[in-house]
Amino acid sequence: MPRMFLTFQSTTVSAVLGAAVVALATSGCATSTAYPADSHLAGNWQLDRAASDDPDVVIAKAVNQAEARFRKRLARYGMGAPGGQGSADSAPGQGSPDGAPEGPDYSLDTPGDRYGGPGLVGPDFRGLRQRLRQALYPPRTLMLDVDDGEVDIGADRLPPREYHVGEKISRIDEYGTAIITPSFVHEQFVLKSRYTSRAQRMDSYNVDPASGALNVTEQITDPMAGRMIVHSVYRRG
Image 1 (cartoon, rainbow, N blue to C red):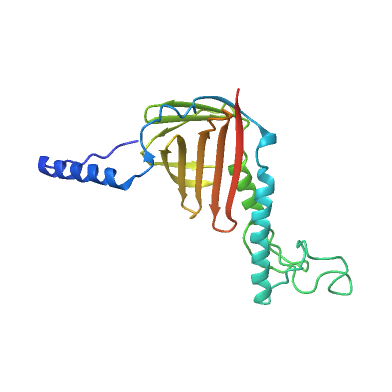
Image 2 (tube, helix red, strand yellow; image 1 turned 90 degrees about the horizontal axis):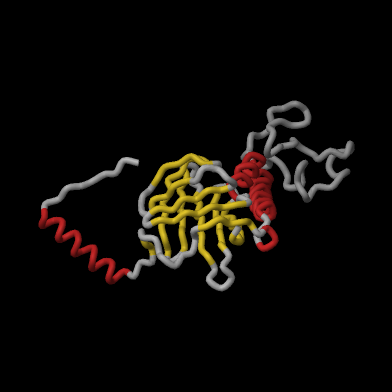
């Protein structure tokens, strides 16, 4: 990645450096651009599925809540009822005499009603579930290689991705296009991602000094589904 360099006069450099020293001395900021020697992140790791969160449960809860909120908005404007087709609240036999729910059958994933009408084009919750599963499902294996100022992360034998601490990078991943900022917070390696879709993501990696396990936390804040957090535990392979 090309780097930008700014040239100042010597007096300006001295002033800037002096201000930076004062700021560091007074701010107490925990973020660092250097690799802490005692992080113990480097190595090969195997997922302990029994000790980890089930991402399907987390995703289903968040997306179902988002879908329920959308159905309520439809009902408020008279464009459908929360108990329509596809809702967990509906029951067979309610609605019209033939057992079908009254009013248009607004599908949240496939536009159109049962009479062939155009229906309502709503959020693609089915596609959202798929993207979230791709983004939040933890890999079975992780390989971490840490050098001063650089962290390489490989997952399930795929080529590792390089992260230079303190340098922003642009990348297209399974969730979209993002600007990623890597940093260390004490012994914890953190990746903060901001997506063009306005979604945000934060991945953190740290080793528990007591158990020696690698704890990976994936947090996504999606504009439709809200915040989801998945904790995964890895053991040395």
